[in-house]
Image (spheres, rainbow, N blue to C red):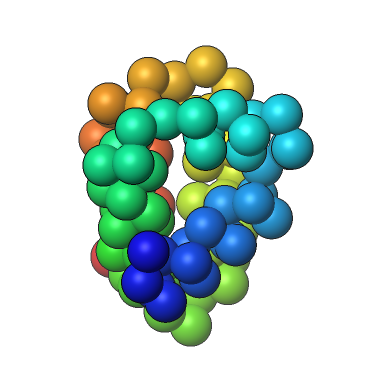
Length: 81
């Protein structure tokens, strides 16, 4: 895992409850890395927009309440552009 992925993993750990984060860590490594890359891309769109980052964090929390990891990149999208 590279430094960017570790940074996104820390962000996700902060966003999720322990149980949901532990479930996330149980996914296949390629799915984890893909999700972390998606988080990075979405947060970069929100550069300097803390409100947008917070909204995205809430979107991610909601997604992991029952979303399919294969749909993460299409269903958990920031409002930043």
